[in-house]
Length: 218
Image (cartoon, rainbow, N blue to C red; front, side):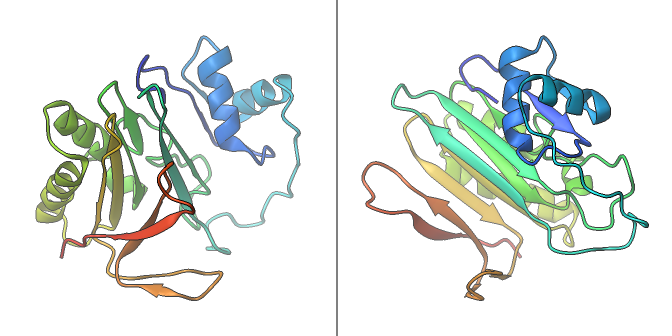
């Protein structure tokens, strides 16, 4: 999603195209539509030059398989324009056709001229709260990204104390914030354990990416 124009692109239930987030950007930039799904999304991606890598259909898609994850990125340009993108493998053992929050504006991500936000967690529950839109709305009213993230996660926690969610946000000044209900997270590559939800910051003032840990609401 592009903050300045509010242009948005998404693909859901996309099979055989490894770079789904790039296909979503192509929808935003080259399609009259905002979201494409299933076979239509695959045909569009192939028509835009994306290489299809077909994978065998699993015998039972409702049996949890290997690892899964969601990746969200917020970028603040030198022109102070904001952009946000999210890519996910979805929930493990999901029913065929299931769509979570990651591809939906206001749920998994949102951006406007003042701020941007994205989130990860229990997508079926996240859809009920539109947290990314709520955070950006608070930023537009003058709240800092950190305060906005905390307020939204606190409101969600009051209604559902068992829900897992992590949010990050930024504004046009380059300020950022994060908050989560995640008590701990272990990096699957390094096995390093974090007492909360880690997220990465990288700016022109940093020589290398910096890992921060979001405040936890519990």
